[in-house]
Image (tube, rainbow over all chains, first blue to last red; front, top):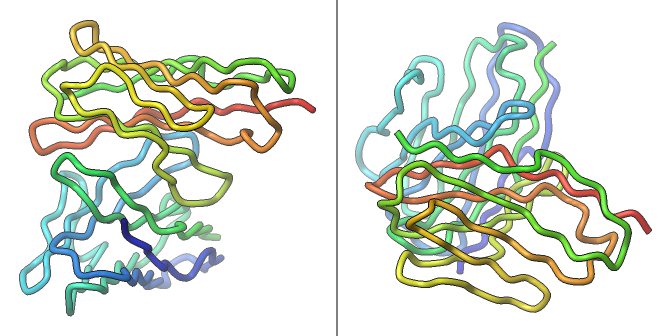
Length: 113
Length: 110
């Protein structure tokens, strides 16, 4: 199993600013995943973060808007840049793939005014 | 592209009743299916993981079945309790892709 500490748990931000979300895992993992969950919608994968290489972004998501860092095997950050109200969502980090259980952080509920 | 649908989107049941939540998916070439629980504004907690070769998994009051050929899974929660109130999501993994449903929002009325 894995325990993931994610922070902040929630934030209210002004349009045009940036927010960095942090995830710390209690064990070393190769890949970490960042998801967005818009109100009333299912989870959408933003990107996969590998240690030592550039993150891989899904269609519709770009590095300038969602820069990701992965400095070691237990930590990653996601920044939501130049925010607009459309970025109001829950952001989640996750570990575990390849036919095994998934573990999620507690989520960051972001509201942009 | 895998599409995952959960029906009903929302339901309320009196305490003690059994809950039946449905998940359907369009591509039967899956590795596994997982059920999660999500509390309001929170992350996801894995409840049950069913591998593609399995028909069901059980944990306490929870039982999940998988019928790959028909693209369906059902989560049963026996003798529901107010603490079971949450949103339940299913996720299907296949072809290195993970697809989530929108969830079943459950309220158990004391």
